[in-house]
Length: 274
Image 1: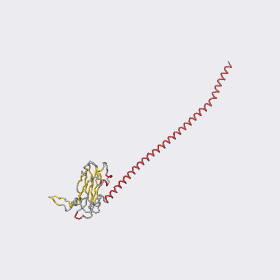
Image 2: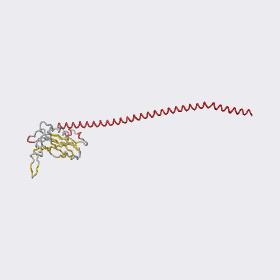
Image 3: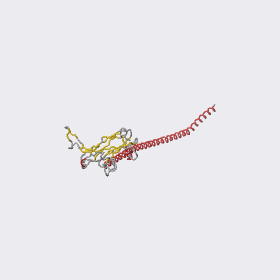
Image 4: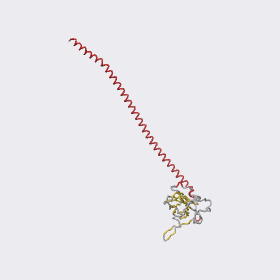
């Protein structure tokens, strides 16, 4: 395809070398296209280095950084030279591809894909307190100690490089893998704990609502019982009232009849006297 996919800064990996101390450097990637670009970092010495992240996707016209850490070394390399090699591969991937969706087949040339390859060399730098610091025009200037051989002398893409290293293994040290596993475990535990806490809150809320419902049902039952008692009491009062009315009617009828007959008798006697 011929176009430049990624711009890489810096073009060399510079490490401050001290025995039994780690050293890190950061690499800045710039996507120069309007496409999604996937990248992959490889090295001939996966046990010596640690890369985060070693794969990823860069959005159009965006940037991404990865960090290379050289593990603490117990001994200095012969002549302070490292023949380690790094390779940054990049290729165009479908729109919307995420970091988790990057697969090895993206970087395979067998299917005719265009794979951009950028070689990087390793530079060892003396620490600030090193005797290598030499005065220059009255000031101290730090110089690189030794450089690794130019990558052009031993091309990264050849099959004869570094016996025992197959196709530039992706950069994964045991420590990096263990740390990644621990981070995933912690993330999973935190996620489960959060879900458990949310479930506990929902159960507590449901329990409160059930208690409120039980209290409402109990109150309604009490009100219904009181209404029934009032109804029964009213019915009894109605029955007693009816009975009293009937008794008064039975007792009052003969008295009226006697009065009526007295009046009629008196009237009849009065007429006879006339």
